[in-house]
Image (cartoon, rainbow, N blue to C red; front, side):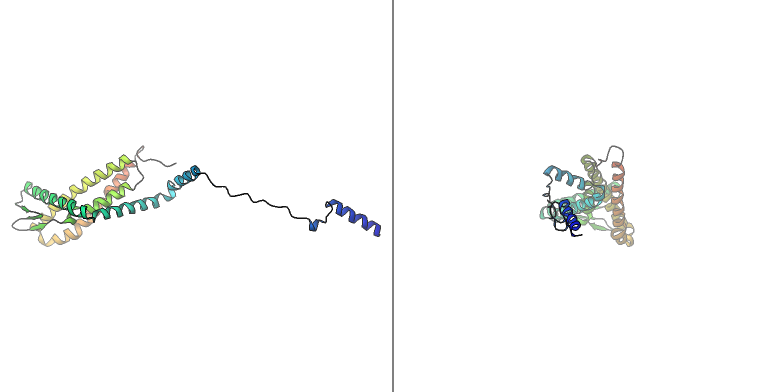
Amino acid sequence: MAKKRRKWVKHKYRASSGRPESIRPAPICEIPPPQVAPPRKIAHAMRLFWSSPKFLAYRYCGVFALLTLVFYLVLYSSFFGGAVLSSLVDAYSSLTNLVLHLIGTDSTQSGTLVFSDKFSMRIVHECTAVEPCGILAAAVLAYPAPFRARITGVVMGLVLLQVINLVRLVSLFLIGEHFSSAFEFVHGDGWQILFLILAIGMWLLWLQWIGRPGMLRTSE
C-alpha cells in the first residue's frame, strides 16, 4: 500500500515540474507604459471636440458672451463713450431735424435739442441704438458661418437698425407734439419692445439666409 502511494506522489511532483501546484510562483504581469498621443493627434481631437454638434450651442453662447463683454468694455471706454457717441448724437439730432422739415414740421435744432412751438426733445446717448446694434453684431459674429456671410449680416443689420432708429426718433417727436399724453408710454415701453422684436427678427432672417444650400459651412 505504501509503495503504491509513493508512486502516485512521484507522478504528482513530476506533472507539476518538481513542485506541487499549490506553491508554484504566479507569472509576472508586465504593465505597459502609458502611451502619449502625439501633438498632431491631440490637436485633431481638440478640433473634433470644438466642432462637435453636441457642443455647438455651448460654443456659440460662450463666444457670444465674450463678444458682448468686449463690446460693453469698448462702449464704456473714455474714447468711445466720449468722442464717438457725442458725434453720433449730433448726427442723429441733425438728421431728425432734417426729416422733420422734409415732412412739413416746423422744428429747430440747437445742439442735441430738437424743438418746436409745441414740443421739445433732447437726444442723448441712449437714443443712438448703439447697444442693440452691438448685441446684434455679437450674435451674428459668434455664429459658425462663413466670414463673408457674417460681415454681410453685421453691415446690413447695423444699417437697418440705424434707419429704424431714425424713424423712431421722428415718430417720437411727432407723438410728443400731437399726442403728448402717449409719449412716455411709446418712448419707454412701446418702441423698446418693438426694437427688441425687430433686432431678433433680423437675426432670424439672417439665419434663414445663411441656411440656404452652399452658404453654411459644415463640420465633419
